[in-house]
Length: 382
Image 1 (cartoon, rainbow, N blue to C red):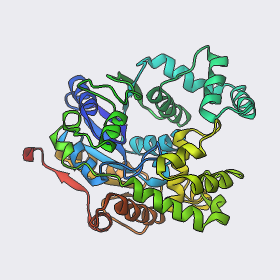
Image 2 (image 1 turned 135 degrees about the horizontal axis):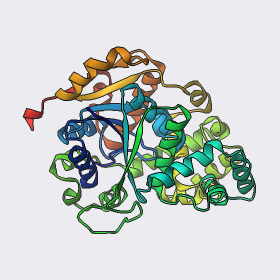
Image 3 (image 1 turned 90 degrees about the vertical axis):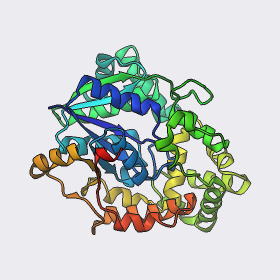
């Protein structure tokens, strides 16, 4: 039996994700699918348009067997930290094959890019050189890889895939790597095909469009509206009231705190705030993550404290997933939890969920964070 791992955000779950799961089931009909899932905040520094419990239900309805939560302290981080948590959890659960969407679907090319970042002694010095010349980190990374490899990955899903592969190689995890060709591009925010990207769907949601065609009824009924006006006002309040202490927040480098404050004073919306902070050195994703850190109170001290996974939280199990988990749970080295317990990392998860609930106007989510146990899904209920 194959145990397939997928790293996902499902923001929102859409037909492209169904295609990926269907492809796995076509290739490996008797496989167990384990998904490492970011919860209410994502790698790109955004709030999810689906709650983590809704994402879990949707995943299980679409033939995922086990859903594991990537905690906030790793999900709202760089690709490498995000990948550390996701791949570590999947490894602990006995995953033997990682499946991911890829623009190139060129396994050897992706592995070559990953190996250069791990093994080539010139790599770090080249990255530092390009950054000293004013390039941001992703651009410096790409330039250094191109110098050493002849060509660097350019597309966002390929870049993320390289982070997964680096984590697998660094830790000698016994996992195969299986890219699946993406059916669309991440930047296709206005494309109108049958399958479009999550970015495209989020863009349509912000414009008030109906997106049922792209996500399907089983996901559309759970979609939540992000109140960006409220989000902006709360961030603005924190920036103004904590002007002298903004440097304490994770990813806020010296000098940037002044730019954030000055941008806050002249901005009239969240999008304006991001644009006014933007420089060549800082990507949009990094600015978004910084603002989420300020909003949630995630400090550099906390980032230092939460460098390692404390536990693995199982959000959902199918009947097949439950049987599989029973067979391997004694081999999992980290504590596995099915409900809210007294871990510092989980207590902070409750805090960020409470703040998320304000923005999506859902009073029940904080209580669900405390009361909910692992969702056990019976496929006969579909």
